[in-house]
Length: 164
Image (tube, rainbow, N blue to C red):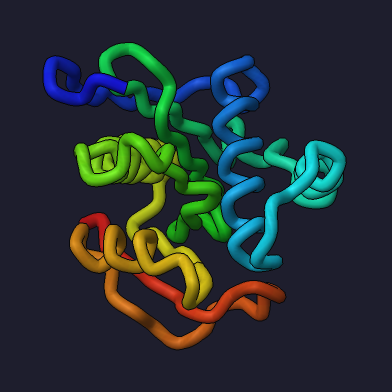
């Protein structure tokens, strides 16, 4: 991926498009592989996507965003309303070869804009301890660690950012 002459864009896209699906599969392969400390099979990715569907990431209660580097899909993320004032980030992913080039910032900005459009005044998320790049990204962009707001089986850190 040539990052020198390219720039990032991020915009809402249906989570079922080929690009969005490929990014969601890459996200799942990475987070599951890091958790299990091994490569993940295609069948395991298929099952993981069935177990954690993205069907709530559509209006009027959510959005999915694809980030493109020089026009090529390289990042994604979703947002969904937990309640009328609180949105939750999910499936935030930047392809390994594109990390450190501004993709995370572009996707976060688009997701925060989507959250505002949905009426949210705050954004929350949970993540795991081993996802150090994610935790660093969130802290860099104004997300502060908060007490647990859910009891997800993989949640080890919780963050929140006020949008107003």
